[in-house]
Length: 451
Image (cartoon, rainbow, N blue to C red; front, side, top):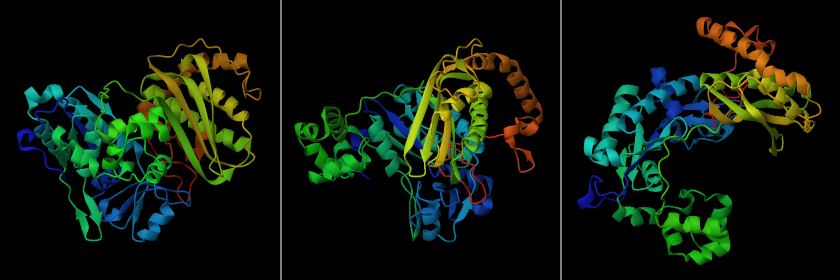
């Protein structure tokens, strides 16, 4: 940890005061909160099947080397005593809403990054709430007191520094147990260079494996070494945009503002299957369920969308997407399903599909208009004719409103389509984008936030 300069110990001298708040092992922490018997155990939220991955894990599991995005098979090898827990997206979303209420009570300038982290610009809150450090400490204490879970907070004059500082503020885990971090870490302008210099280049945004390999070939492994590299050299090796971008970041230059109005670009649903599916009928059946999930979440958010996208990942991990933009927004499952089904019909699924997804983008608030004109000429195998498709949103608009009212009064499983019948009961899908894959006993993906 780089100590802050005495004259700016509380960050009052920062030209901009930006906080990055990141929850500690969020999904796993919520599971432990709801089931105290799990406290102190190596808990893993993730899929238990052969294609499952770790979505989140407690620090007790991290002590064994378990990390997010690790294959579940590998996680179990590293930690045989791990307790795998099925994810509960709706619960995480509920806690996240409470978390963001705390953020917005601190400052209106909040930029959410998924469910469990956000940037906060507290520059204008200093006169009322005190120094940035004091604001961060108070916010962290409030989160723990009101929600029962912990977060780490980084403070800097830019989003880059705040983000990197929050990571350094986090707890660490090894075989000796969990080592608490500072919880709140302030990096002032004078301390930026020293703080950045020791970090690996992979810590910077935009440095993936390919870029890291190119920089390693130049003998550059730390941000400090990158900052000393002539910008012209970086441009010649990485291109003008990439070279200039990394040169600026290495010197701590990141003028991007906190964007409080940043919302989801799309709402989607993906599922990873235990075995590859290669029949169009079965995939279309899955697609109907996914369209219902997407439509439900659109209406819950009072949104409609114009662009329908189908994502197909094959057994060899090659991935394709097919999209169609409508002249007017939709929010009903049959309308979304008609377009998505037509798009899927144009894909050769015979190689076997590992993952299938549907999303709707071009989001806009309000009640979507009902007069549509679907141009599905590019998808000749569409299940509905153009004339039928054009009437779907209109004809289902009132029906969907009635279904929503029934579910509101009697529960989500009170009514649904035939595609939702399974295991002798009605299974209304929740929003799931399957980052952790299926369990041993099902082929249904698990939750993730909208993109």
